Picture 1: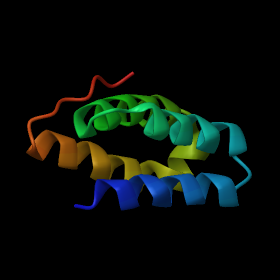
Picture 2: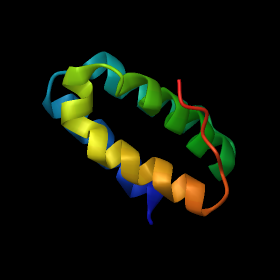
Picture 3: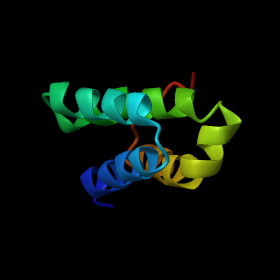
Length: 81
């Protein structure tokens, strides 16, 4: 999986639905990460927290689940908020 492309897609969906605060939060985490592991942990955790809101879950729930499953396949466990 191209996780960078997946994260960018999630940001685009959030932005297209006027969820700019959430989109900026994910972009900030992406830019602040020094390693792929740090990126997946921080973004994965934040996204798992965000999808607890039903409106956001309807927008990006499937995309977030794909990303979390990818992390599990590479033995990177994301604490779900």
